[in-house]
Image: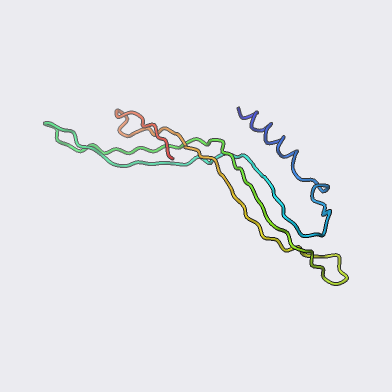
Length: 134
């Protein structure tokens, strides 16, 4: 699974912008659109739960519970769309530098992920808690 993700990432990176894609072909104002995306891994996190419960009946005592553990990371995707309007080129005298003002609207979607992990409980006779954090 991990080798597939690395291969996919390498393919996506190889399709990235090169100087020929970035060259300015016109100085006329106009509308533009773009699509972008990516992939990554959500970080793992530490979790801890403290509390307790009361044993019913003749014991009538409180048992303290302390559980801690760590979740794993999961792949997560990012997808975006942008649209805008690029204004007329403004030059700075005889300099080769210029400025093209633009207004842009951009939307971004980040995929959902739920870290999953297990938390061994103390006292150990109570077992392990399996946790999903949204």
